[in-house]
Amino acid sequence: MSEQDPQQGTSGETAFEVRGEYITLGQLLKMIGAIGTGGEAKYYLSANPILVNDDSEQRRGRKLRSGDLIVIPGEAPIRIVPLVREEAS
Image (cartoon, rainbow, N blue to C red):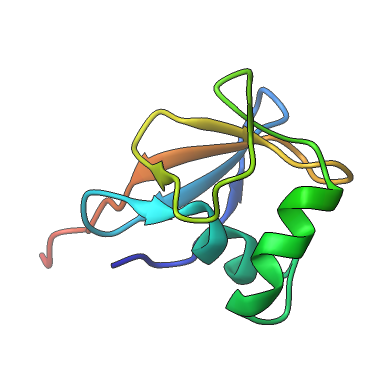
């Protein structure tokens, strides 16, 4: 469903490429190393103020789609972007 390929953008945001329509907030937290297992997501979200598009979010199943901006304490803001595949020449 998703593929990790964070890239630092010029605006201080990290671009996170997603294969498919969405990635859940819990999956994102695991992929960036904020949590070790998916089971830790509920606790992590209750203890840390996460913003998705400037709104507080505590649902680990929240679907993050292209264009969404996620702010996690201690991390650069993350912008969800579609996975761009390069064509073979």
